[in-house]
Image (cartoon, rainbow, N blue to C red):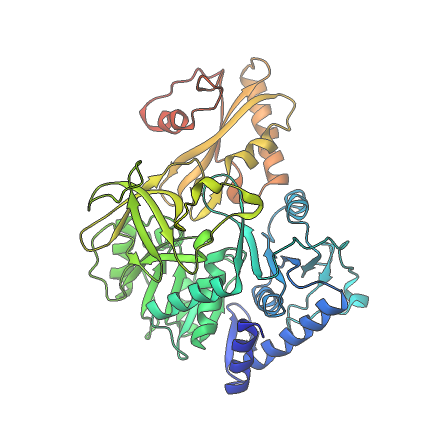
Length: 498
């Protein structure tokens, strides 16, 4: 029997009427008994659709309660869950579907093709009323029977990460143990559920602890603290972008039993951490993680007292910092961060980026950092060019492909620009086919903005378009993105067309 299914059955038997999931802005909630009913119903649905064990089920679900029920049910039924961004425009959704090649698609919107889920119950909707049909079945990948989750990696160019059920649960237990979660805890998660953070840190860790999780579709600053008081929240799952916004305003209410606030996915500015901690009177736990490790790698202690600027010590994962020669660096020396452990993948799908793994099982994270004498990790940046926009990872190649679809664009490069709240935002440098005057430049930028709005999620849309006469390249023709990033702060190297 699936370990997750066994866990769900145990919760439903021991405390069937205990509330497990709550919608933050309505009266809807799912008990463990309701979750068991959804799990059994989806198992029958998948069998009826002849979805083989290990086959991919794409989840295009906006409602947080419905997503959680289907996500857990698919994994418990021995299939592979493949979540995508439900806010993505249709063009991006189609690209995701072509890339993932799922056997079945599940959605909560009738305009999306696939089997429909009832948001009110998490159960499969009646096809006669939903007006939806299953997708054309695609053959499951050979050898993926144990894979429970298929998602995009977080190191460099997009790579497919396959995580097993045991890896997900191992990581969830590490999180629950470090955070000392228990049945009386009530967590609050405003982060997108198609990301590994919300899936493992919020959903699975709460399930492991037997507590309650309050889910919000997205973060809203207005009334935020009052909402936490209303739901009697004991811990908050957040990212630096959220905490940076909250730090700009007075904390007008604090849940009486709030124990800690968790930050992940990107570096947290020290000023924001200190302001939020002072305003709430509870510690802010900083953490470091990645999809390839099923979320959390390091975390600071619940009681605080860690060195300023650190992301904590390893939690259930081995970590080392090595130099270019592969030898461990002495304390305080910056090098390459490597990890291994039960929750860490040993390879990417389709043999991608095999050079990141060595024979001893170490994964090169792509991050630079240093360890102090106490084993605390301090990150120093990344070697690759991914744009970490408030914890959302934007891959330049995907954005560039969309911009190159404009006939007037000859070349394009996307790199990170600094942002006070989000940390970084994508900036696009555009070389047009021919020189443009001021009016023509404005028209081109308007067309590019519209194209991005139609084809890219909001976080992937460039915050700025720079029309230039050329791009800096290496002798082999590669764009030197470092020079693009540096030009934002040390003076432009390029010649603009206006």
